[in-house]
Amino acid sequence: MQKRDLNKSGGSGGGSAAPAPKRGRPFGSTSGSAAAFSAADSVAPSTLLGPSLQVHTSFAASDQNNKRIVLALQSGLKSELTWALNTLTLLSFKEKEDMRKDSLAKISGLLDALLQVIDDWRDIALPKELQKTRRVRTLGSNSLVTGFGYEYEALGSNDNVKQSGLTDASAQKNVAKFRPSEWWYDEDGLFNLDDEGRAEKQQCAVAASNIIRNFSFMPENEVIMAGNRHCLETVFQCIEDHTTEDEELVTNALETIVNLAPLLDLRIFSSSKPSYIKITEKRAVQAIMGMLGSAVKAWHCAAAELLGRLIINPDNEPFLLPFFPQIHKRLVDLMSSPALDAQAAAVGALYNLAEVNMDCRLKLASERWAVDRLLRVIRAPHPVPEVCRKAAMILESLVSEPQNKALLLAYENAFAEILFSDTRYSDTFARILYELTSRPSNKFTAARGVWGM
Image (cartoon, rainbow, N blue to C red; front, side, top):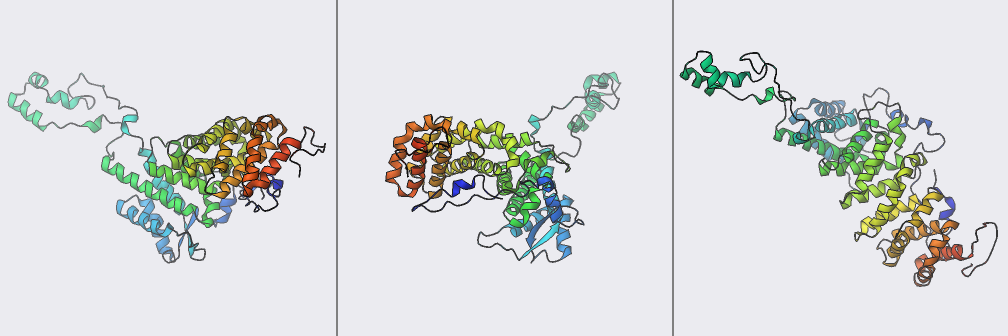
C-alpha cells in the first residue's frame, strides 16, 4: 500500500533530504477490500464472546482475573466497577519508549464491557431540562379517590375534608401526614439517579473512554478496534454531541478515532455488522466537521489530523468529497492561527487532500489566502522543518495543474525569493518555477523556460 502519487516523492534532488513517506493505506483499502469488514473478527478466536484487547500479563495471566475484570464491568456495582476501571487504567497506561509487545495477553469481551459503561452514561446524559417535559396525569382529577390524578391533594384539602364529614382535627392530621409524591407524575419512574449518581456514572464513562483511548495507542489493538462497529459508533456519537457532552469524554473519543484513522473504513457504518446507534457515513463526517469548526484548539487540531488520515484510504473519498469546500476553507483559516500546532495540523491535512484528484487541487488553489498562508508558513519559518517541506510540496502539487498557472504566476517573485534565500527548499521551488514558466498547456511539447534545469 503506497502513497497516492509515487512520483511526488522522487522529484527532490541536490542537497535536500528525501521526503519522509506518508503512512501507508489502511488495511483492506485496495482491490481486495471485500473482506475488510470481517478482518477484525478473524483476528480473535471464534470462541470469544466479544472483541479482545491487550493488557499486561502480570495481572492477566490467569483466567480468573480476566473474567473478574469483565464481570466487574458488566455488574454495574459501584465498588466492582470502580476497581475494574482503576485496574484497567493502570494496565492500559504505556510509556512511549515501552512498547511491551511481549508482555500482553488477551481478555475476551473487554471492549464490549467498556463500551457498555459509556452507553449507560449516554442513556442518561441528556439533562432533564432538555428532555421532554413530564405529562401531568389528569384522569379522575374531579374524583376524591380513584388511584389517578390529584388523589392525595384532594384528600388533604380542607374543603374536601369538610365535605366528607371529617372534623377539623382530622383534617389537620391528614394534612400533616400528606407527603408530596412527585415520582407519580414523573415519566422516568421510581429509580431515577440523583445528581450525585449521575456524576458517578459520568466519571465511570470518562474513565472507560480513557482506557479505550490508551488501548488505541497499541498496534496490537488497532485492527480489532477499527473493525468493531459498536466502538466506532460510540466514539463518533460522543464527538457528535460535543456541545453537551463532557469535554474529557469528547477528547478521549476524538483521540481514539485519530489513532484508528489509518485503519478506519467509513463503509463499516453501512455494513452487515450489528449496529447499536445507527451512525451513518454522512453523520460521521458531519461530526468530524463539527469538531473541525470548534474553537477548542485541541479539538480542531485533532479533527484536521483525522481528516488527513482518513483521506489516505480511497474508499473514504466518496464520503469526504462533498465536504471539501468547507474543509479547505477551515484549514486555510487554521494556517493563519498563531498556534503552531494548528498550523502544522492544517498543513498536514492539506498535504494529503491535495493529492486526491485534480478537482481538489483546483479548488485549493482558488481558495482565498491559501497560497499566501502556505508561503507564510515557509517564510516564518515554522519551527518544524517537516511542516515547511509539506507546505512547499503542496505548492508543487498545485502548480502541476495547468489551470492554476494564472493564479500562481502572481507569486513568481515570492517563489524566486525563497529559491535563492532558503537552500532547504531550493530544489522544490526550482521545480515549481520550472513548471510555472516553461511548461505549456500541451504536456507533450518540450520547452526550456527561464527557470529550466
